[in-house]
Length: 420
Image (tube, rainbow, N blue to C red; front, side, top):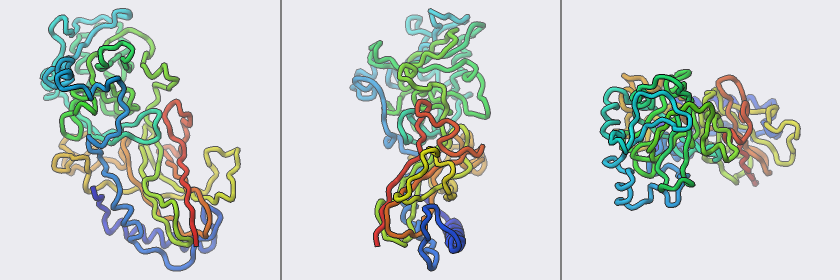
């Protein structure tokens, strides 16, 4: 997709850049070196990198895949997929009580009882209850998102209520199909309160069957998967087959055994997309990137260029005292990408205005946003470019949760060498 950026944006960027250069005439840039003197760069200096930005939404086939299983369930032959319920025609969902920590339920849905929910049952629920919302999918232990999608399905609470729960229900555990091998089973869980209520205007946890307006394919976890809006990917279990209602008081997610923080929501962080590794001295450097807008929101993206000849003090590991400068957060795109039908946001999508189709707020929380900046020309030498976010509470990345167990959000460092 070729992103659309209005002449107003380019003109405003040129004006700000020109003012930036003028303000630097009596000071120093972030690296401590003086910028190149002379006229401000042309307004189209960023046009090339902006034109090459990735689409806002990711086409389903372009998502990165970190699926588990040997063999991977989505790689099974078509006949085997039909046999084990990995097609829309053969999918079944058991909704049952935990035998070891039983809740008080009025009803269960099982294959043995021949009343397990099928895909048509889910679509019937969807006629009244279906929701769709944008969400970025990120692995807890990978430093970049897997893809940005528009997910659609039925709130999990609608299925929970079908069991007529009465008491002693504290948690919902769920898992998908994993080759009928107990050692490969991958499960996640959530407190019942999060299933029944959407805190802080979060979208609901859903049984998802569509991505970007199209049926969820097998590689993305279809026919049905869980999507937890505020969570990392391990909570959004693929190839859903079982929902287990329990009175267990604690989480028992598979990821807990890997020394992970299984309750951390998405973090806010920034990364680069386009940075030249080499360049000409005293020539402006265009830079583009993206930011993941986590649970704490986003107010700024900032950049800082430092000379490699001047080490940073070890007692400031998160560069809190560095002379960061604001980059430009780009506006919503005119072309959304992701192979959306008609390249349009469907009506009644959460987070979007029903009449105009425009985002109600920007940047959208739990999504991504693109940013850009034009670095001033620098003398010949070796430099490091860093970028970071500042969240809606004024906290600079990687704070307030700098620890990797709860999701990667290190400050990225990109080397740049400039020559005369």
